[in-house]
Image (tube, rainbow, N blue to C red):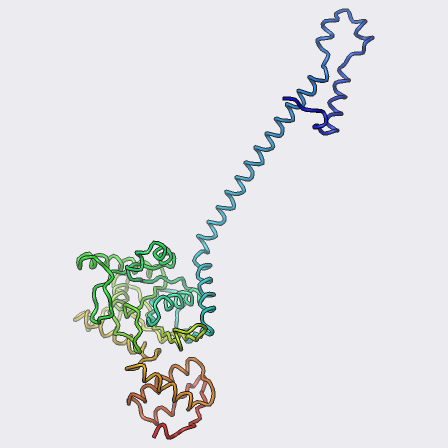
Length: 387
């Protein structure tokens, strides 16, 4: 390997040449030396000095390169470890806030009421209605996370067949549910398991849910069992109250069941409005489990608790026999109200108008629609509509 002098740094070359000259004996000193061969053998020539310096420089550069590469590898490993740690600790929250941003991007307005009805700690089961498929799930999960609770949820097993959807659902804390057929035609069967396999999977699912609740977490359960496009809620299944009573029996700890009403003002339209209202909580405790009614007929008591939950949820949602009743009620509301109503008052007033249209309320009852927290101004523009 040949290295030219020009390729070497000037300062290093001068120091090497100075060293060479210092070790070189003058011609006069060489002539007076008795052993000329010995002296000449100790003389270092410029080529030897340059070769030794080049080898030293090459070794130095190689060591610097190896050290730099090792340092970069260590830095990348540390950065990757830190990134994985951040994802592990805050990944769910970050993903939830991204989904919350997406929801606020899709809806022009999202209003939430009754937030004080949701406990900030302890085992809780939140029970929303299910009129808009995955949008319901995203709204409820992101809102619960925003309120400081990391929710878990059940999801029908068929949704986990897609690998991508399955990973996302599990990341959101979803648990697959293998559902038996329901009474209604639109409650589909999404499992190919035998009834015995479904029963075993259901027992395992209940036990896992109780463990999650025992850790003080929140679980979101849709008691209707499926999404719907009807103008009213479906009949509730008993799964929610079976979870609640089974948890109290297994861990001797009370649990809170919170009904939640979702109301879409136009769910098929981009930039529409949606309202979420948390209802009065239902406490299932040891007194319920140890009552005579529960001890005598547990199935009937669970059904009674489910009916109570359905009544509470009916108050938080819009329900009619058909969509025509909704259209008539909203037309009356536009004619009857002087200005737009608050979303919560809008839902309750529209429901009373639906009940009036369907013959469930009298005119006098409808005219007394006031909320003592935020009273509405209702000006009858066309009284003949109600006579």
